[in-house]
Amino acid sequence: MTDDRGTFEHAESTEPRRHHGYCTDDMARVLVVSTRELEPTPDVSRLVDTSLRFLTSAQSADGRYRNRMNQHGRWEDQPSLEDCWGRSVWGLGTAAAHADTDRTQARAISQFERAAQRRSPWLRPMAFAAIGAAELLTVRPAHPEARALLIAAADSMPSDGSDAMWPWPEPTLTYANAVIPESLIAAGSLLQRPAVLRRGLDLLGWLLDHETRDGHFSVTPAGGAAPGARRPAFAQQPIEVAALADACVRAARLDGDNPAWAAGVERAVAWFHGDNDGGHVMWDPMTGGGFDGLEAHGPNRNQGAESTLALLSTLQHARSLVHAG
Image (cartoon, rainbow, N blue to C red):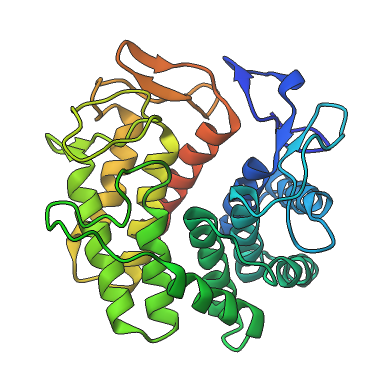
């Protein structure tokens, strides 16, 4: 799925759909997963270099990001502060904290500092960026741009809903939902704001309960879900499961006495192995690719970048918890 430019966004079964090109969202995910790898192989190290080079090309001089590159290497959109910005900041902060060479860390920090001058008006990009800032602060606690960005993200989070049955800070669940409580958990911990940390943990606990049905994850579908929406609903995306695993791992590091967090990671792994609303395995053991979505009739068996990275990220977290234990 990856050539010298980047990772192709879409696949037809296992074959990349080259004419769809590449996207910054995916390359930021590649950077997160590849730099978190504890013992990177040469192939993984090449993925780090490829993704960091792609993000460098995607970034404009003012810190915003383009998202779509065609198969010939030409950008097809204008720089923005949408998800591609937030996910890039997340990837860069993760690389700064976990990359295995000083050179890679320095390149990531330099690009992070340019991006961190900006603020997105949208909730999820700021949440993604907050997680990147938190990652950088774990290795450079006094980093001024990372700290300022994390404060801005925490201060911009909307308040919880007034309905005790629906405390979510939005009228509907949409996509990558767990990134919101994860960003609050990260900000509350690193900024020493106990109320923010508690809010993030409580919101994640509610989301885990809401996304669980009959003991397995039944996650929000691609079209979103309002209070009282019929369950189960399909077009379930692996990114939702991976986001839950990300948030649970962060929560477990700070609130390890609560078994719900490790259980959430286990439930995420189980979703890929078939403990889901359809009883279908959601990855291909022959290729290591993740299937693109769970439909009412079974898996969408295309193995695109987002879905494969969601699988790899979730399995990576499960392995890290085993090592930590």
